[in-house]
Structures are given as C-alpha cells and as structure tokens.
Length: 157
Image 1 (cartoon, rainbow, N blue to C red):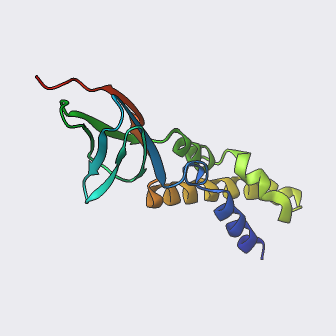
Image 2 (image 1 turned 90 degrees about the vertical axis):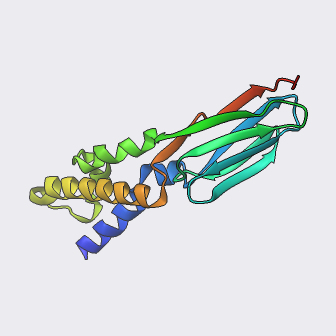
Image 3 (image 1 turned 30 degrees about the vertical axis):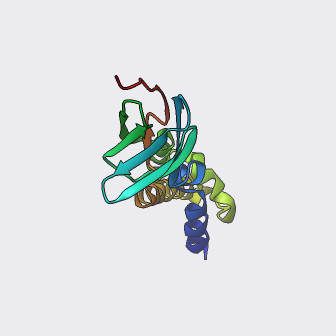
C-alpha cells in the first residue's frame, strides 16, 4: 500500500513544465500598420493564423516554425521561431537526482526512522523521472523564441 501511495503522489507532483506551462504556447504578433494576416506554419502540417494584433496558439512540440505577416501593398515579413527548452523542464532533474524537495512530501505514509531517507530519495527520483517522461510526451518541455513578435511593415514601391 505504501508503494501505491508513493507512486500516486509522485505522478501528481511530477512534470513541472506540464503543470506550470501546459502543452500549448501563445505567440503574440503585432504589426504596424495593424490588420495584417499572421500565419505560423510548422512541420507536420501544424499551423495557426489570425489578424494583427494576434495571439496565436501553437503546440509547444511544433518544430521548424515560420511566422509570415502579410498585408496587401506591404512587403511580407518572415520570422523563424526557434524551438528551445522550457526553463521549468529543468526542475525535473532536481527531483531525478534525489534532492529531497519532492520526496519529503511523500514521507507522510512512512514514519519509521530507518526508512525515512530511503523513502524521501526514492520519492524524489520517481517524481523527477516521471516529470521528464510526461514533459517530453506532452511537448511541454519546449518553448518557442521569439514568442512576442512586433514588426513594422514597409510599403511596396
């Protein structure tokens, strides 16, 4: 029973990026003049579109993304969105290393002094490893940069 509760609690406490950021990201796009069409196209037929000023929602797992801002009579602007790691993802490594932050919370069901350290270490490792797996599976381990884009469109001559 103790190990079942340990596993249940570790699943609830894991995946820092999934819990704090979620699998989707909002890319804010603004142009001068406003009213331009903003389209993000990524590998795997993932896309989002809107009119500036726009808030485009994109799965964090999307890769090879390019933003295009188009307005009739203006030059088209393109911006590549680089996919990098979400800073919250790295917290999982703290738990996976056995640091007692997560394991202390799992100590409630184990009150014997001799098993306390082992329970705390195992709990922290379970929390960290589960977080690494969940964040990777949901794509929450990623962020796109830039996530705020402001452009000034130039008239065609």
